[in-house]
Length: 197
Length: 197
Image (tube, rainbow over all chains, first blue to last red; front, side):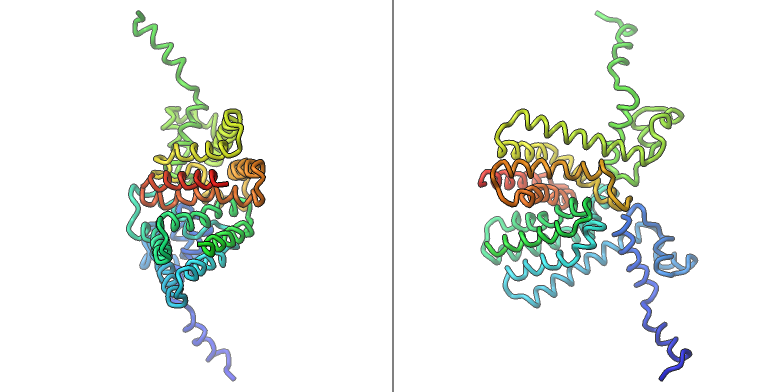
């Protein structure tokens, strides 16, 4: 039995720190609203970080975007490493990637692909993509290319781009129609294509 | 022989009117910079329409966006009607559409797909897509579906979405890498897939 006085510090201790809360809020808001519509003040509010305090962590919108891109790239690396550790066969690895995509069909149909929908706004902000931005977009394609190559397929780079395009391209009509079913059925067809290799 | 005095009125007469200049400037700026970064004042400046005059034609950014979406939708309808008039065979029609895409690979690699890159920003602005927005995204897929159906293909809706996705999805890595070649080779593979049906 704990009284409310002793429970409170434990609850406070479990709460993520301000930097983590800011990044989590930034990722959600940028996905929902886009880069241009998301302000530092909004991120601070959503993260429950006092306005006078937030500039210690992020100063400009560019800082917010850089953090979002970096964390997305880190998530991609972690996901790919986990798939690589769990699955030995290149086909199963590719299908696990498709599964990863399909797991977020609902969110993608609502707000667009969390990776793909960053790209147009990033592309319109900068003359050249940043290293982190390019890595984010190309890490997945590069990894898929490796798997196709391990399958002994010629044109593995094209196959990799077609795999990515087959899903990310469907995010556009799916988010127009708010229809996750379009993404689920695209994922099924991609799995069939992988199986038929 | 004409002197400069008599040539001047002819040159003025050939210049498009203010509404046309505003729409053309809005389309170019929105493609290059995105919706959120494009202001009415910038559109007016690019269109060479006096700032005091522009609000007679467009009052808000929403007016600018509505005009861009409407003109893009109109261009899609015109393109599809022209293809339909020129080509009788569904395969040739589909390949003509791919050609249309490929013709703008350079611009797409620089600024993203003029249609596809609108979608994420439109989706993040509104709870539900507007009719014009939905039409813009779905007219092409609906038309492609009709062609696949005319070829007697089952799953013609899926084939249509895959065709669109195969190109639009490649616009993301192509604009990340500023590489139109990725789009050209995606177009080749789509044409091969159409030929193999």
